[in-house]
Length: 321
Image (cartoon, rainbow, N blue to C red; front, side, top):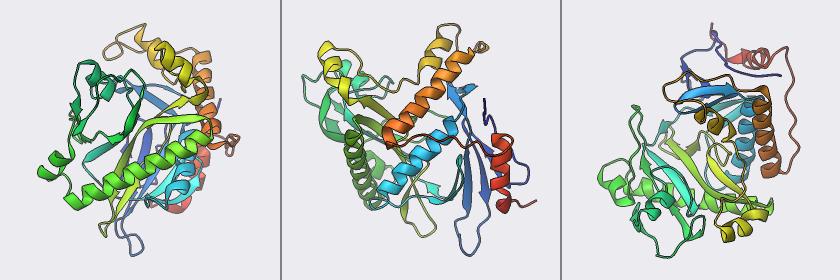
């Protein structure tokens, strides 16, 4: 099975290796005063603050889903993309990332401590600067989409819930920047929900990462509306699940996470070998998500002797050593 488990390429400058992406910063030049960033999406899958496995074609799927959405939302918000030299690679403007993570939610859902559902179950009705009505049920549509921003902890700390007033008062963003970011985030989410509905899907919530370029323009960075940054439900099964009080059907990528958590303490113990059939099933989930979201057949890029050899060849024009 063809897997891109890493993209360590010595000829590329200024490396930064993340949990699932391997990145390189190209120096600024006259045409790109802010510089450029090479973002290579590997097939690694992470959870519990560690790498669990590599999933065939995961990196290509996420890169191409984000591309599909970037191309359908650039009239709403400019994005960082400059080129796609490979199925797993984006060349983007190097932005100054804004220190606020922008999460837009359309439903009372979620499992983390900062999710609106977790807080609502505790009796909290005022959160993130919004007041939610009494009587909402798990996974119910909110009266309207809301933004639930958090601080972006660059130093490994924990993200903290914020209100719009706190964002401005703390100097994280100016009032003008927050007004622009929030308007664009809600418009992007509305476009996402509309196009998802046309494909029989519900875009439940998503997170956006915004940054500024050398001229101070606000662009959307990273990815958009992928299964890793967004929650999708299958519309056909939503009403029955909501009536029954069960979780609506979704692209269930948590099968590996659940398998590992049932067999060890995933934060401290060695990760057991994950069965090949589970790796293959997770790959199928990602491919199914691509086809459901885009309406297009997934075509794996089988060029090159290996995926790494293909990526290296396609990035040769950017080599500096």
